[in-house]
Length: 72
Image (tube, rainbow, N blue to C red; front, side, top):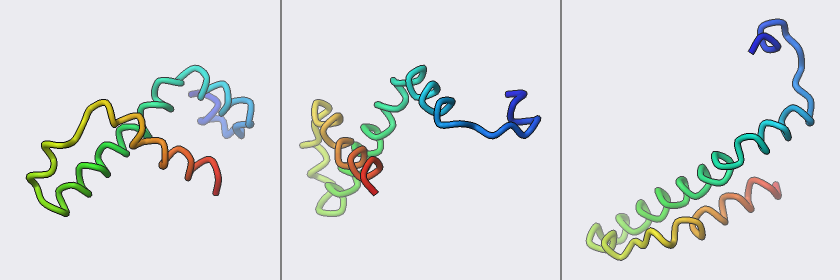
């Protein structure tokens, strides 16, 4: 926190270290966004289709978001 105040630039090592320390967040955010995307897509067809949304599908829904962010 004090590094940001002093203006120290972050290195790739700092970002990598943060990702390894917060791997749960790094994995859950794409899955959560994928689930929201899936619910919105189902509701755009018909709100009744949301009942077919499966919790077990959440990790798979986040996979395309993860792949898009890794390969620009």
